[in-house]
Image (cartoon, rainbow, N blue to C red):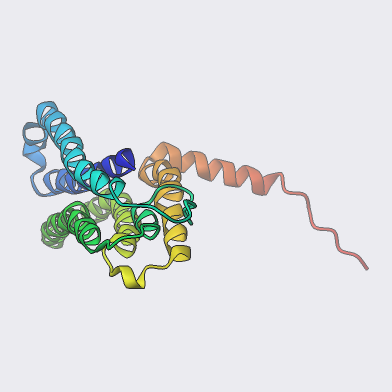
Length: 219
């Protein structure tokens, strides 16, 4: 549970940092190498994991000190926080409040920073005179936007809503999306902008169509 919260919180913060990276690349391209230096990237990465550690440690300690006196089978495929708290035989209002506060810190605040970054990006793109420049700028942001919507949408529905409306079945389905499908799709999503990958996919699709057997028509 600790490492799950640590890595998930760090991932949310890194997505916000990536939005800032795109803001600098589009709005201040001539100063990009000076602003986004290797030193800054290293510090931001360490800071993201440090913030994830500060979010994960207190919540894990709070949940692990809950009394569990009934059955010990979690209706989930891993120790997700809402599913574990439902097994506790004590009042969990404090723990739910702590989960909500940490969810706001790890999800809502980075998402707000992402929205601000993309607001500045859109304002810059609108002022561009070149149509090809606008297309290239939107292409730069498209893959990141897809990952952000997938990640933050599932996390918001899971952790930033009242516990009374929590559904174990829906929680498991959403968890599958952001713990399995999102990491699997990330390499493909981030490779869409790579022209070599796009050309390879087109050649593969063309080869499949070329070697497809002709249909048989029966009288």
